[in-house]
Length: 162
Image 1: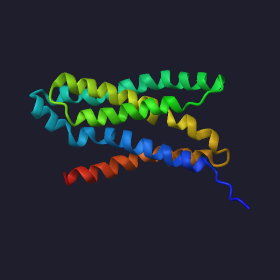
Image 2: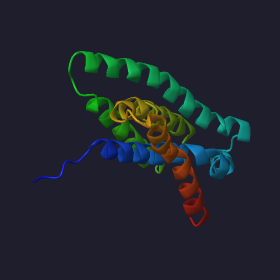
Image 3: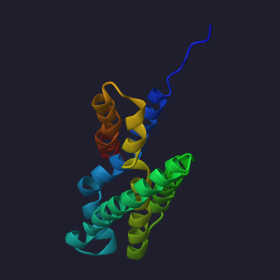
């Protein structure tokens, strides 16, 4: 007799990991990178704080478009996987490129790429997680969404040693 596997738990873990990686880094930008970026680029701290603002603004604008695309894909019977793949690729490319940025315009471009990635994958993940859990939906949504806060905590500890 085969054991049935409920894939909702895999979706929960995936949501947690998406939020952990994407939003975890976002939550620590102000705490660890504002002053070093300000010194590196020779700009004011206020101007440097503009980077996380771009990141979050783009993410919040993209999530509207991403939600619409997800709805249209579902209505037509397609998978919403491509939306998350594009978002995850943007987060990966943005993270990789972020380590090589040396100029102010490149940091702005990196903020746009990372914001688009988080908007497509991190914020929109709750729309994918919700249908998998009917009973205790709120509990499982909060578990998935807590990845961002947990990621911020772990990344903060990691960057203390870097």
